[in-house]
Amino acid sequence: MIMNAPSPSETVLVVDDAPASLGMLTSALEEAGYTVLVAQDGRKAIDIATKVTPSAILMDAVMPELDGFETSKQIKRHEALRDVPVLFMTGLSQTEHIVRGLESGGVDYITKPVDPEELIARLRVHIANARNSHSAHVALDASGRFLVSVDLSGAICWATTQAMALIDDSWRQGEVPSGQLTQDTVEWLRNYLIEAGRGAHVSNDVVTTMGGTKLRFSYAGQISSGEHLLRVAEMVDGRPSDILRKSFDLTEREAEVLMWIANGKSNKEIAAILEMSPRTVNKHLDRIFGKLGVENRTSAAVISLKRLLES
Image (tube, rainbow, N blue to C red):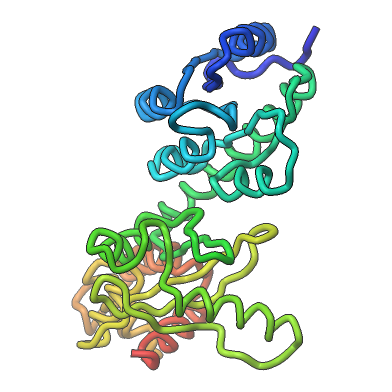
């Protein structure tokens, strides 16, 4: 008997063209407490996943027409499904198939015949990790920060809504393959990691053009093995408050408050200049700190001054 039953809301999509395998997996998952959805081919799997977001997907790697690798790639193109873990099942154990599975968005590789208890144990870990990852992504989205997570091939693993809005135009115009960064950005990232690893002084940012928009990418840190977090900002000309507004997704009033903070003005002085109460200035500052990811006015001033000097 398998203990620690999952939440009733946890749903697993099983994709396999073999009825016997589908039956065995469905029984094991239902016994463990999961709600099970089934598909016997890749296209049906995509259709189901886009209508009912599963907690995880068990994917047979080798299927006729649309194989598991291509099915996973197409599923991962949907923003709502990017955090859903895909676990590949196959009798193949060659390195190239394992690599293909990981490159197409898989998080794990299970060799057939599948051991039900091992499968359930792995599922629980990946569903928990995905839930934590999704919560972090939602929090970053809500903070209004411009962040994108990429691997060393330049493929975007995840991005905040604000960052995606900046880079999406280049994909629609066909300048850059969908889901990818420009080649010069990829080369900069690889070089930065190599040189920084040697302790050499190297620029932690690069300027490129995507969709006719000039963007600056800067290195923010490593998330996991092979996955790196970048900040992205639009290079804009104009008034300082306009630059800050566009760079940090601020309202017009928030941008004006931040501009005066960068100029060393106190809350009382800003209130007088902008004809508002000091209390209102404080409310704007609370929202500004959240969007910039800082905790005090000094840090906010440093970030805004750096951004203005870059423009």
